[in-house]
Length: 210
Image (cartoon, rainbow, N blue to C red; front, side, top):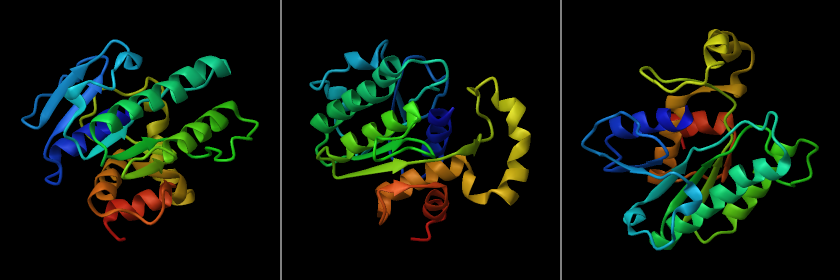
């Protein structure tokens, strides 16, 4: 869901010249800017893969819910997979900006009682130590899908109606996927003083008020 929303904004935004979408399944979108790279397993992406070369940024949007998962399995999908891809893209693009979609509540100390918060905190810390040009950790919470999205979580339709209400009573806990995507693009284009961006930071950066 996040990846599709970001993809749609990147394709529409004039600041983005080209997009390489790395995924397991075809996006079913066709655009002059878009090239798709289908892989059955992200862990099989090689550091010597020259298809990754020539990019200014990597917007890492892959993720999975921790519900019902053991820590070892969740770590494999969240930490191991993310850092593996990061190592591959930095090998091909030493001056790359890496943006990781983490989540509200992530624990940078890695000491939280919540397993997912510890694992995502470890992932953020490991990425921050890599020699990218810049690393940003985005921590969105509830996100409203963009118009025209095809790949939505089944449960999303049961909660989408809450967005207008949450926007009023919990403004720092909701954003649109378009705002998330715009903030990513602006972070690469003009930078941001913080490396960990909560919802309010995402909104500020999306508006370009930096």
